[in-house]
Every structure is written in structure tokens, then in C-alpha cells.
Amino acid sequence: MAFAKQGKDVDKSVIRYNCNITLPGIRPETYAYIVNGNDPNNWSDNPRHILDLLKRIVRVSVETMRIIQSFSVLNEYKA
Image (tube, rainbow, N blue to C red; front, side, top):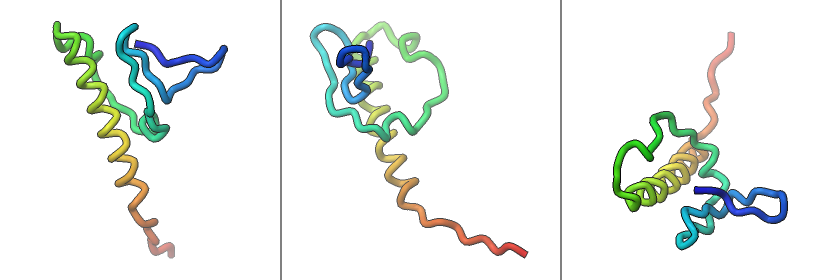
């Protein structure tokens, strides 16, 4: 897996899974949500499983950032 490139610049809106599968339209907020854990490549011998996980990570990242951004600012009392 790799990001697309435009010259020397990395384009994180496109993920190249392999020469046949490219995922375009990855939104910037995907990278704001950090996932802690093990390498998903160790979870399964099914190559499709990795692609499915990647799609889910993108969805969870975008939805999490949408929820976080919808929170109102807390106005805490300061003495």
C-alpha cells in the first residue's frame, strides 16, 4: 500500500492498495483520527480483509471527526 504521488509531493487523498486497486477521495480528516494497535497485515491471510479494514478505518475516522467537531465548547467556571 502506498499514497499516490504528484511529482515529489505525496497525495494522501489517494491510496494505492496494489496495481489494480486504488482508493480515491480519502478525506483529510481521516488522518486526524489516530488508530492505536497492531499491524492489520498480521490479522488475516485474506488480502481482501486488509482492504475491507482500510475502508472501515476511513469511515470511522471521518465519522469520529464529524462527531468531535459537533461538540460545543465547554465553558468551565474559573475562580
